[in-house]
Length: 141
Image (cartoon, rainbow, N blue to C red; front, side, top):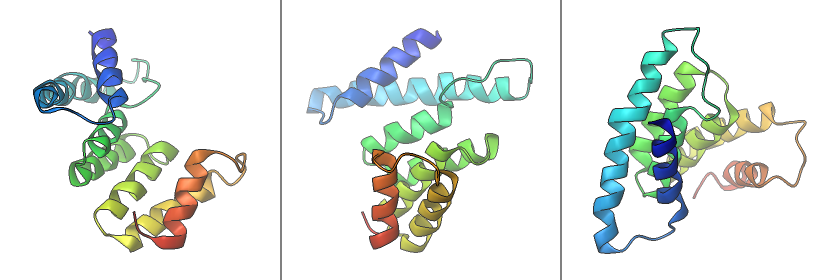
């Protein structure tokens, strides 16, 4: 089931714009993730013997929601991801990006600063660092 879900997520994320007939597929993918994989992962978090996925489902779902233009719901998913896996840089940056899209400049700057603090030793040319620096400088989209 996981392989099918990951393929579905990859297919949806790879499409930069969606035609009208593809919106139904997008909604189906969203429901599949929300009801299937993400909730399945939540159940596994209670059992410590289960291996953790490389990308948490809530984080992945949040990225998909950002690409779909739904920053409020994306913000909620990134927050859930942070509660499950504290200080995960991709979730922190997702929170910053979604806050900026929600016109919460203070929240965007705070999360971008947190991200930059965690990645202070990273290579300077990473695109994630550029995004965080832009969010710090402008606090806007």
